[in-house]
Length: 171
Image (cartoon, rainbow, N blue to C red):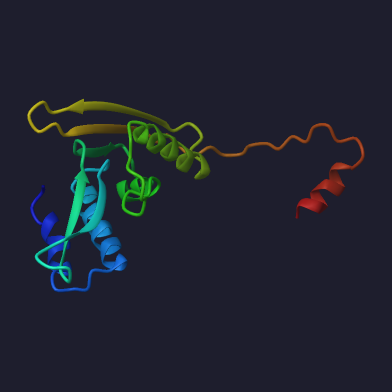
């Protein structure tokens, strides 16, 4: 485990009442700690097991962490990396991320640019994995281009309203 991950739950759980709320808190704390270290596929399942006597319990957290992931963004000036990552709910999402996460992220980035008027932005991604650390790195290259400008408005299919009346309705 990355340094501090176990402490994140253990430090807040010891000597507390064994409640469902504590299980949820520890699960959320461990998941957030692991995901902030790049373990975006991390899943945590917490439960209580008996300890020395019937009044004491041990909080057991089963972890499935997967390979660590790093996202590197190049070429973005309109949006920040944090804004991109917010679109996949990295820390709030309860379900673990899978292999399709990068595709969803790229689609979300493309949508962000289109909504901001960058209709010709180009987004590409490249995946590499370090054989020693098993860390997966995604390089996401963004060519923002320029925002598109509307140079002309054409109304087609209208036979009932005059152009003058349509302009009045739009204003």
